[in-house]
Length: 86
Ligand SMILES: [Zn+2]
Image 1 (cartoon, rainbow, N blue to C red):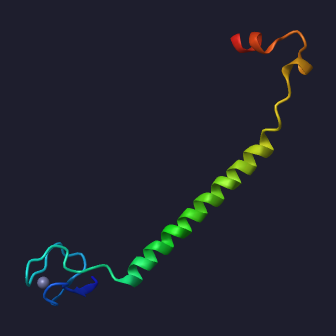
Image 2 (image 1 turned 135 degrees about the horizontal axis):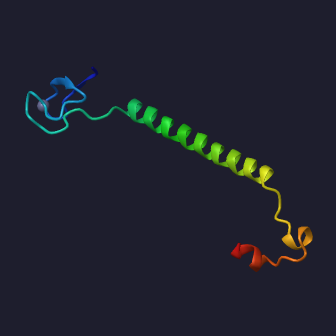
Image 3 (image 1 turned 30 degrees about the vertical axis):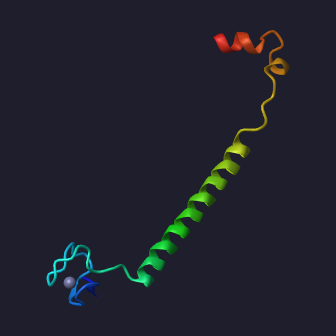
């Protein structure tokens, strides 16, 4: 368990502590800058991974689903409307 100092009285207490055991102030230990930076880094990396995944998905779906060719060329009898009703 990580320890930190209370922002009010300076007493050592757990970072996860809701109140300081010394003075009773709420959320006594502030999250350190390095911890914030680490969380921010994870968020940024996660964002780019997600973005990369979306691009890969978009590219893959583009390849597997070629440009729409009108059904008229395949079956001249059927109009787009009659094929929708079936
Ligand atoms: Zn305190």
